[in-house]
Length: 208
Image (cartoon, rainbow, N blue to C red; front, side, top):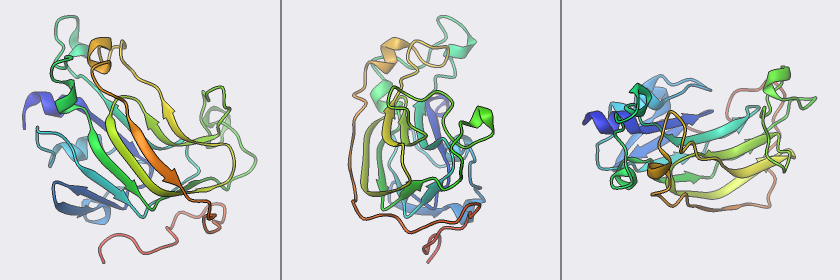
């Protein structure tokens, strides 16, 4: 894998049950991933430099600020001006893309609702909508699709856009080179109830 592709990817998930990369199906139980783990470095071992194709399926995300965070981090930029690895010309190739989120549940059951900085599980800096939780926090990625998402609890924002372009992690030029696109649907059917403190998924997941 090239140095550039290793520097570009940033993906954080609250709980990932199944992921599919380029026709290979990998299960989190096989990889030893844990709830709330930043799995960025784990993806580096099997992602090629030609982009990303990931399936997140049948997963439960609850009582955490963001279920899924998708971002692109330029490791070279952090070394100083002129060290950037990502540009407008190559950003589309290396940014996380073609990611599908299917049949997942996002919600919260803990009360009272408090932000993380006050000992709760909610977001510390909500948007004007005043959300407590976000299903997808899209920083810099594209081609994201969610299908048949179910929500549990109120004040959940399905998609929060917040590019890091112009920061010490990614240039504004690179960030503006991609269409931060997200499409999908949320089912009206309520998610099954979850008891406070529960961490087991209420459906079959992992190797079947």
